[in-house]
Length: 476
Ligand code: NAD
Ligand code: UGA
Image 1 (cartoon, rainbow, N blue to C red):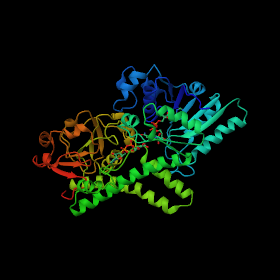
Image 2: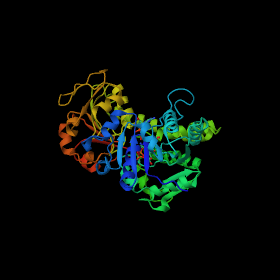
Image 3: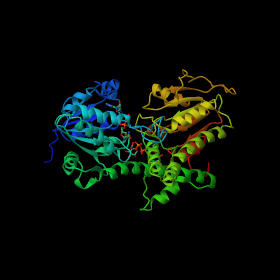
Image 4: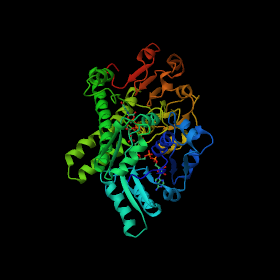
């Protein structure tokens, strides 16, 4: 008989666990949803009285949390207690790339997932459906099952488990919209009754035709493959942007031309500063590791090239900034607009801005960094260099070999004031509304605008006398 689900527990209150559970609680008022995490600070923020202080910024999320929190959505550090009461447990913890030991630099580090499986084995009661929500290497369910089975072999009374794979496809910045209207929900597993139980939850708001059922290994592999294909498109178009700049073509025109082919499709063809985010790189490297592990070096090499191209592309951007500024940025002020890895998120993980800023700092530049959602502490952590307090408003005197430093700016025009160059790295809407006439009056001449996101209309810059470089523009 299909187990009726009443209590859900999600382990991991991060970018996936938080929004996903908020939407489930909102759409399924009959369910009790408990989100647990070891991180006390994060849970405190999820419980903030001020809904602007939630740990994750996503359009529409605060409103949902406000509607459900304290009613059927709860955030706490009570991991074992909430596992005990749950009929269904989502594992939504981090799965970063291993940084040491076997597979270091490529394989996923599954220690957090393994820890969850042990916690579930120890504390669950009765029948529990364990759902892999984290992105995992193919065949991880086997490891989870064997940890759970071990608890049964050890005679831990009256427990039974089903394990499902239900990877998440949301994108940051549009998490709520993606969760509300997913292209598909993927559920992989063996036990039909468990699949039915999870499918029933989603069918509260997702049309049944969009709920796909597969075997568990296909589901795990489909998630890695989806990210690999998406990232591959970005590396492809970024490689073409370099060719456009060399030949006089325009990458926007090329994207439009190829995107009109219905077999190719128009999405994910925007050339930018290189893909960031916590997942693309780690998931492709995971695919590379798996391919090597299963004796398929050619497959591994094929996918590794996507990540290599991305590194090369980020280097290319910092190098060309230096070249345009007469071969040196030492002591020059560069305004960096955008630190998040994309717009509408405060997440900076693997953001192209990190690498590009580090390269420019190494060249001795003084960076004034602005981002509407990322704070100065996060930037300091990412750059691993303490912020040197504001140079803003002071004239920057270039000195050769001066050590680069950076400051945070709350205000776009402060960041740009007296700068030699502006480098747009995130496509925030605020940056599309900049008054370039005004900018031309407050920059040090000759001044350069580098638009790595194609968000500025060239016509607005040309009449100001500022120099403009745009990604993939053969007329640069
Ligand atoms: P995250 O780092 O934001 O959150 C993970 C949380 O899990 C952390 O708060 C951590 O403290 C907690 N945690 C770790 N071990 C724990 C344990 N044993 N008990 C309780 N809490 C524990 O990660 P995320 O971005 O939410 O990603 C989670 C998974 O989802 C990853 O596998 C990722 O690849 C995948 N994913 C992420 C996204 C995304 O947009 N971020 C989208 C789809 C899939
Ligand atoms: C990506 C996938 O889109 C999600 O489906 C997946 O669930 C998620 O990874 C994950 O597994 O973590 P996300 O990383 O949040 O989502 O953001 P994307 O919109 O995919 O953007 C990733 C990077 O590619 C960003 O740096 C973005 O600026 C860049 N990008 C995207 C481009 O440079 N050009 C594009 O045309 C699209």
